[in-house]
Length: 122
Image (cartoon, rainbow, N blue to C red; front, side, top):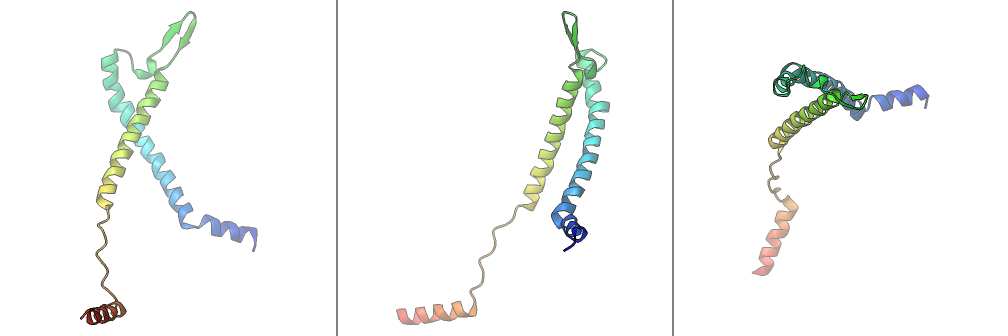
């Protein structure tokens, strides 16, 4: 089997394609959450903190400045993404919750064996 034929079979497996779609959608979703954070949530936090924004938060020790605002913003982005994904997955799980399967109808052989068993009991 040729190298390219093997690669084509590998690349076209259902799991690989599903994974690629998930990565693309995840990237787009990350951009949406980042935009939500930057345009709505961070300005609200800036009102509370009183600075130009969370990304402007920094502290100084001696002559060294530690700009921790970007780190805090990344943490807030992560928490929001995790929260939204949790809500989406939780709602999907509740929708997709499988009802227990109905008991299977006995086959004709099973019915015949049950009749024989019942006759033998008599």
